Each structure stands twice: as structure tokens, then as C-alpha cells.
Amino acid sequence: MQRATALLLALAVPVLLVYFLAALPLDFAAWQALFAPLWSRVLLMLSGVALALHAWVGMHDIFMDYIHPVGMRLAMTLTVVVVLASSVVWLAAVLFGASIGCGT
Image (cartoon, rainbow, N blue to C red; front, top):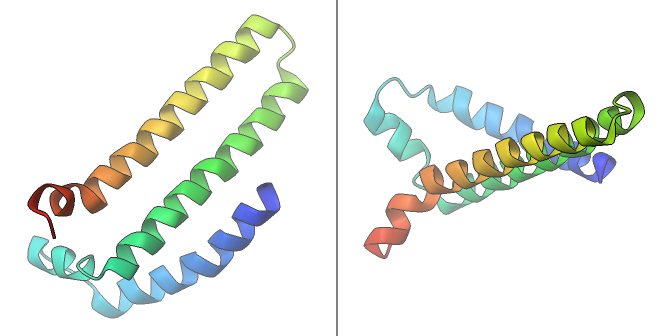
């Protein structure tokens, strides 16, 4: 999982970076136009999910190696999962929320 998400991020991040730098949006309308194409929203969403999975696997490994009390390890793992999952849901709401509600 760690290697697969790293590969996806290594491919997607340069594409998104070049896309953002080529557009250089300065106002809200330019940001909206930047994310109007479906492919840019899907690629950014996939990158966000890959980043969350990558972070979860890394943090899980760190907790398993260095946090020995089971209760503390469980609490820390649950906290990381909640933060990462809510971040992915928030990203989906930002990227697709308006288009879901208006039927476009």
C-alpha cells in the first residue's frame, strides 16, 4: 500500500503542480475555472485519497513500532484515522459538493 500510494503521488503531483503553475490563479473565479474540468477534480481527489492512505500506513507502522501501551496506540490510531478520513470527506465536499447539488 505504501509503495502503491507513493507511486500514484509521484505521478500525480508533478502533473497537478505544472497545471497549477501554468494557470497561476489569483482570484476566486480563476480558482473555480481551474477546477472546472472533471479530470482535474478527479486527479486531485485521487491524490488526496492516496496521500491519506500513505499517511495512515506510515503512522500505523510508527505507532506499532514505538507506542507499546495498547490503549494509547489504539487512541492514537483512531485519532489519525478520524482526521485523515474527515480530510478526505472535506476534500470531496469541496471538489464535488456544488456539482452534486445542482446536477452538473
